[in-house]
Image 1 (cartoon, rainbow, N blue to C red):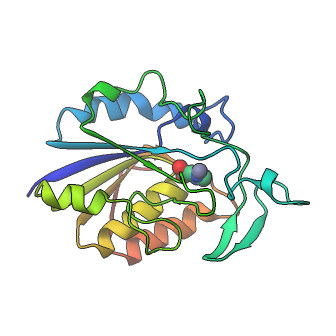
Image 2 (image 1 turned 120 degrees about the horizontal axis):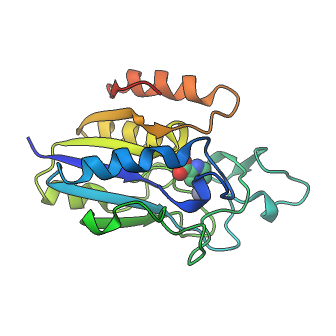
Length: 201
Ligand code: VGL
Ligand code: ZN
């Protein structure tokens, strides 16, 4: 069994003071740094949007952040502008041990489509290439940590399970946005998909 650690979106904009701050998002950084060395395959994901990304409420007349919009691929939460390519907000948290990572995968870089999952864009069909990377490295199991539990960690975990990986989410090293009960919904959905949940949220 070869297990990869996949660290989801530990970026300034998802930490306190950032544009889409996840409560206590920064507190998981030391935990993640302590884990990285123990995995033979280590991947970081980076949310990486153009400044006019269609997931931004600012691109939709009359819409406010956290309202919904109908996209060609289905309903989409509209977010405050965040993780704009090259910005300080899109950079990894300064204390994250980026040097220990083997692979950085960027997602959400096409204007018209969001990508919560590290494996597929939000149409659930356009691949990011991470599946191939992991499979060519002999990875059969993945452990996910990072931000946010109920969005990018959740979508990545469910897709990984669907792709046949043995999936564990460490909730102690993840933090949630929790919009209208989205944390509970995501935990139920991950369990239904066969994802193992460890640690308390
Ligand atoms: C995320 C909302 C928008 C995440 C990314 O990393 O969970 N959430 N973009
Ligand atoms: Zn985003």
